[in-house]
Every structure is written in C-alpha cells, then in structure tokens.
Amino acid sequence: MAEYRSVKIEAGRGGWGGPLVITPTEDKPLIYSVTGGGIHPVAAKIAELTGGEAFDGFKSSAKFEKIACAVIDCGGTARVGVYPMKKVPTVDVYPTSPAGPLMMFIKEDIFVSGVTPDQIKPA
Amino acid sequence: MRYSTVVTAVGPLLGEFLAERIIVLFNEDAPEELREFAVIHRPDDTFEEVQPGDLVCFGSHDPIKITAVGDVANKNIAALGHAIFKCNGKDEPELPGDICLEEVPLPEVEVGQTIRIEAGG
Image (cartoon, rainbow over all chains, first blue to last red; front, side, top):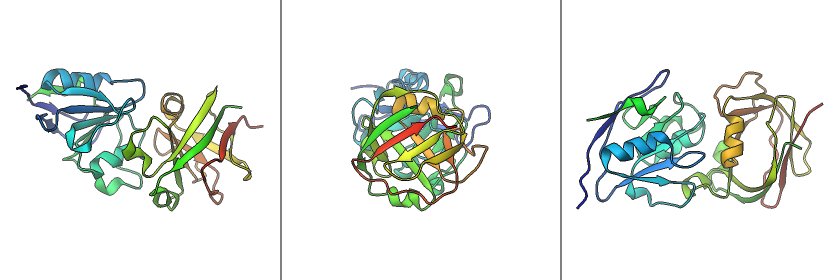
C-alpha cells in the first residue's frame, strides 16, 4: 500500500488564492500536469513530496475522479477555470487572478497561482 | 504565413465562450475536459511568432486584424496549439495568454474550416 504525504502550496509572487493542502490518496493518486512540454517541475515536486503520480494530461487522458490536483500553465482564460469548475484543486504556475468566462468557479480554497517549486512545502 | 490549421472538432460549450467574444483553440492532444468549450484543430508544421498587426483568417471570412499579443500566447501556440482569441479590440492584452482581435462580428467556426494567421502589412 502506497503511503502518501501532504504538501502545502502557497501563492507565489503576484499570485492569487490558496494556500492549498494537497494529499493524494489511493483513489486520487494523480498529480495532473496540463502544461506545455511535458511534466512541469511544479507537478514533479508535488509528486515527489507527496508520493503521488505525476501524469501528463496532454499525452494521455485520466479519469477526473483520480486527480489529486491539476497543475496548469494558463495565461488566464480557459484552463484556469475548467479544473476548479470540476472541483479539482488547481495550481497555476503563472500569477493569474480569477478572470474569464469560468471565473465564478475560481476560489481561494481550490485555486492557487504564481506557484514555483519554492512554494511547495511538506505539510 | 505564421500558422495554418484545420478545425477537426468543435466543443458543445463553444457558444458560451463565443457569447463573451472569446474563441479558444487547442490541438488534438488536448484532454477531454478542454475540448468541451474549445475549437480542436490539426495544424501543419508552419509556425512563426504571431505579432500585433497580423491577420487571422477563419475560412473564407474577412481577415481579422490582431491588435495585441500576450506574453505567453506564442508559447501556448507552439507547445499546445493553444490560442485564446478575444475579439475586444484592445491594444494591451488583459491576460498573458490573450491574442486580441479587432472588434468585429465573430465568424462561425466549423469542422473542416482552415484557420490561418498571416503576417500583416
């Protein structure tokens, strides 16, 4: 049986929202990287510290109910709202504030932005 | 030619974004949840950085001039075939992913249509 640990993720410089505490479980093991160019270093660090499984959302598809958190590099309109809308804790590597057609779903308890590996600490 | 691509699918929630004068593009690698509101497309290998003053052509509709390009917009196009067109006429992007277009009626987007971005002037 895998052992999972928690991390606390705070907003970085110019960022918004959070802090989020992420704890993968057997049912939700995936750290889902929906970023250009493969697994983002932020997703890699969350996976490393929690024992979760880093997963590239642009390479293959995952079931939503298996996602512990999503890591995005969204410039503000689309991905930034989709995952919060689906109640998936969302970590944006850009310092985005709520905006766009889905902004009503973007709340501090499900979204944090401006995150670099330095904002991810064991909890 | 900066970019050329063919529309292969249109998400069922596209209309909600069109109502806000926004068109979101992703290439065919996009996961299911992003396809719901996006235009999915298959680009050829052409890519040059998009700049203000360039023209976007949806099929045979009149070209629409680009008025601003956000800091991460070109990276999004190159990595993910991802673009966010906002038909708001702004000359400063509101968000770093934005590509702002002049404020004209948005064209219909349909499967099989070619979307091209061409150098302006």
